[in-house]
Length: 375
Ligand code: SF4
Image 1 (spheres, rainbow, N blue to C red):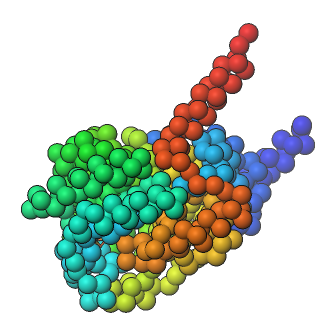
Image 2 (cartoon, rainbow, N blue to C red):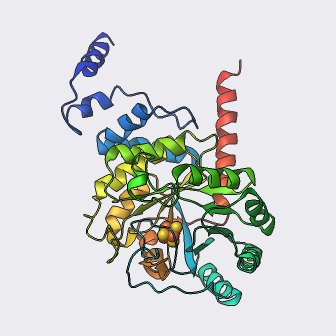
Image 3 (cartoon, rainbow, N blue to C red):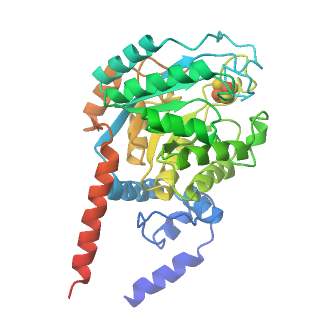
C-alpha cells in the first residue's frame, strides 16, 4: 500500500512532456469517471480531458457511456432538406449561403406530401428520428411556410417517429407553436467556441444562437446543438464548444459532431481534412462532459472507415445520420449502415428509447446506492 502511495506521488510530479507520453502515467492517478451530470465544468478541466492520452480518454468515455446508455444501440436518423439554398447568412462552410458561388441551386420550400413520403421511407428503413432543415436565417415573413412546416411536424410525429427541425433563429412564440405541433427536438448548432465563431459567421451572433436555444428549451423542446470540426479551429475551440454546452443549465439532449466537407466556392473549400484522432478526442470528451446526451456522428461520416466509426461508437457516439444525402453533402445509405451495425454487434434504437433507458438505469443506480447504505 505504501509502495502504491509512493508510486502515485511520483506519478503526480511527472512533467507533462507531450500528449500521450508522460501523461499516460498521470492518467492512472486521475479520479475515476463517475458519469454524474454536472453544469460546473471549468474550461481547464475540459481541456485536461481533451488533452489526455487518447486511449485512456476513450476508455473513460466508454465507461461513462455505459452508465447512461445501452452501448449496443445506435439511433438512425434521417435528415431532409426542405428548403435548399439562397440563404442570407454567411456561414463560411455552407454551400447554401447566397454569399458564395457554389453548385447548390436555390429552391422553394418543398410540398408536404414528398416530405411525408421521405419520412415513411426513412421509417421503413429503420430510422427513428426524421429531421427537416430549411436554409434561411429565420421564419420572419414566412407565415404560410411556417404553417406548412407545422403540418409536416404533426404528420411525422403521427408516424411515431421523433421529429426534429432546423429552421434558423426562432422566437419564443414560434418555438411554442412547434412544440404544440409535436416537435421532439430543434437543432441549432453553436458550431464552435465563442472566440472562433466570428471567423466563421458574421451575420448571426453567438448570443443570438444561445437565445434561440433558450427559446427552444423554454418551450419544452429537446435541444440538439453541436459543432463542426475542420473549420480551421484549434483544440481550445473544440474544448470551448464542449465547455459551453456542458455548462448550460440543462445539457443539450443531442450533440451532433460534424466534420467539414469542403465545398467548392466556399471560403473553406481548401481546408485540410480533420484528423480522425481529433474527431475521437472530441467525441470522447463530449461523452464525459455530457453523460446523458446523445452524440450524433453527422456530416462527413462518409469519409471515415468502418473501423474509425466503430472507434467513435466506443468513444460514446450513439447516433448516425443515414439515408441518401445529408442536406447538401453525401451520406451513407441505410443498407450499408445496417450491415455495418450488424458486423459490430450493434442495433438501431427505437423511437424515444434512450430517454426511457436513462430513466431505468437511473432508477437501478439509485436502488443500488440505497441498498449499499442500508443498515
Ligand atoms: S448553415 Fe444554415 S444558416 Fe448558415 S448559410 Fe447554411 S443554410 Fe444558412
